[in-house]
Length: 356
Image (cartoon, rainbow, N blue to C red; front, side, top):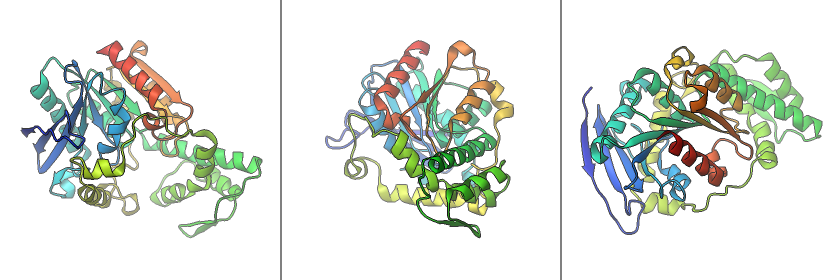
């Protein structure tokens, strides 16, 4: 495993790199930026492992800006072919094995730059949970602990939870006399009412092929609006960052991010073409290798990765009970770090302080 590390520091007065540094990891065809912000005197670095695949860490800056950055260093890493990363776009360079290798090298780069005494924690969200789990199973663990939020380790549990989400809330809407928002047509089927949605979910459990998976994804809008309006609160995040500030007064370029997102989707995140590394997978057999402190912080009303996934994750890892916790955020969907930012931040700080 070889990689070259390029360190550059930026200190522009009017952008998000103010009082921060931009590092780059160059590894096997990709140049990946890592924006480091926060309290550089801290002995803790929190590494952000963003979602997607093909997303960006930039969106998480406002999640950690108000409470986490004043206490710790926070490293916002854009994965290969995601966010502000540059490089080639060959499918051979978009494997989860290579991405897990990237993650290890980012951790080592941070320690090399800021001191080998620094304790590195990670925060993985959505796809970042999948990638972080694969890293913990297949790479040398150099993390002190990890916080995981609303991501999956097994497609069987992921789709079972999504089926329950659609079926349970469609039933709740039926009982309240709430109709389907609009007729849904997908894969040659037409759903004109919620009872048809419930019947399909009952008949299609478990999800076993891409056609069924496509239908399931298309049925989520039948209930999502109702669930979000009924159970999910408006974000309590203290310091929101505007799109203008994020994309035009920072190192993050919206054009690069959009190109990366689209090309990554077409190459590895497109289940319609059966090319995705995110569909029909199971990391469970290797998860006994996970023994480090783990916090599972889950939005209860997530239409993407439901609470059953977190419960199974908690059970299958080998982390001792006193070093793992599972908390559901009862007013959140997919992103509790945004919706319930104050409490989420308190829990992250408490976890880091306990295990650093």
